[in-house]
Image (cartoon, rainbow, N blue to C red; front, side, top):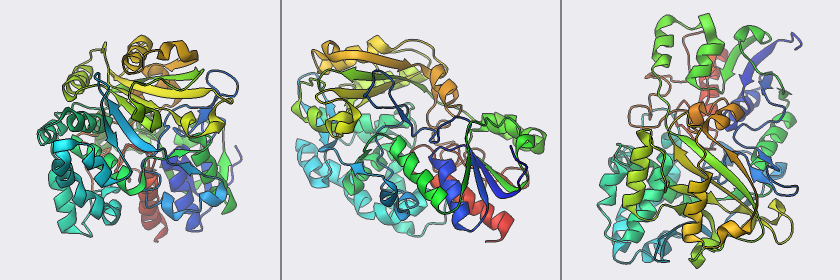
Amino acid sequence: MANQEYDAIVVGSGPNGLAAAITLRQAGLAVLLIEGKDEIGGGMRSKELTLPGYIHDVCSAVHPMVTMSPFFSALPLREHGLELINPTLAAVHPFDDGTAGVLHHSLNETANGLGIDKENYLRLMQSTVRDLPKLLPDLLGPFPFPSHPLELAGFGLKALTSASWMAGRFDTKQAKGLWAGMAAHAIQPLTNLSTSAIGMMLMAAAHVGNWPIPKGGSQSIADALVSYFLEIGGKIQTGFHVKSLKELPPSKAVLLDVTPRQLLEIGGDNLSSSYRKRLEKYRYGMGVFKVDWALSEPIPFKNEDCRKAGTVHLGNTYEEILTSEQQTSEGKHQEKPFVLLAQPSLFDDSRAPAGKHTAWAYCHVPNGSQEDQTNAIENQIERFAPGFKDTILKRNTLNAMQMEAYNPNYIGGDINGGIQDIWQLYSRPVLSWSPYRTSAKGLYICSSSTPPGGGVHGMCGYHAAKRALKDVFGE
């Protein structure tokens, strides 16, 4: 690599690395973005994983936070080719008897579909949906001095509870199951404090901005960000896996889109011993096992609403999901795991040849698992969609350790960059008023291992870049 000097270097091109690089370049700095793979994107990549003409999302597929992100929404991404598609229904949660809980774009329509739980749902979500747009800058950042303290307190009193406690507010299996599926995105036991926050944010995101999928695949988000970054004068180097800060060209600031484990490896002796010890205590959560399918036809779900949904949660009752997530966190593989499934080709015909389809799904597994969960996942889909297995043309699988091999930020298959429980919700990667700043001068961490954590929103990178601009460049 040429020994050219830059104002700032960003290592890693996931949503947070790209957000950091763009923010720094918008401030007029000379910025180099480095990516270890030949393609930009991190968790936003799409490939022909099964058969020619079938486009699959390697990691994330559905993006509730893209339109909600204060950073992404301020960028001209549509002008750079990003087209977001809103499925007819945001998410559906089917049950064995053929009924389902449905997350509509409309708050009231969702509530009306929950029968006697209508008012319970409105009491939970109405104020959150009303206040979310003004709360997002506080919720998607480091622990803040709130701009709207009363509204934030109202949200926090609910959000900091466990999802299992919140489930007690509902009476119907439809409401309980739908809620459990949302909260299970936290990838931790539903009895953990603050798991309600994830469920509430996802439901509110559907009511405020839907759960869109990017036309052509998640790579389209990365491509739009890259196009904008290059347009404003940023520089990119791909195919360079950084193992040490010594390998980098001279710069005033370095931002790493990595988890604490890689920060320890790359930062080396630049980090203080006390900071290193704190990073070594950082905890990672459950992993995932993922399957992509090329299909001869749409998934033949028994419930018609599932055939209109971009996302389907397969776990049946609240009690089944509660048990599955608890046991998985204890290191046990599940015969009937909770499955998160997306059907992008129902709404985006660029994903598969005419008349054919793609599907994407994963379940949670113990961190570091190498066990094959293909049969368990496919049996769960067959349970709610008899005949599904007959539609499979080809599949591609990734176990938890293969996920880490693909993206080093997925330690043991943990796609959130570390467990987001009550102890690491705002103390990521360490408890600090400035979580993005490391102990080394000019060195910052900007990954999902910092607040606000996992998801394609770019806010971790944005806040890290703002911290660097203030510390190093006086802006």
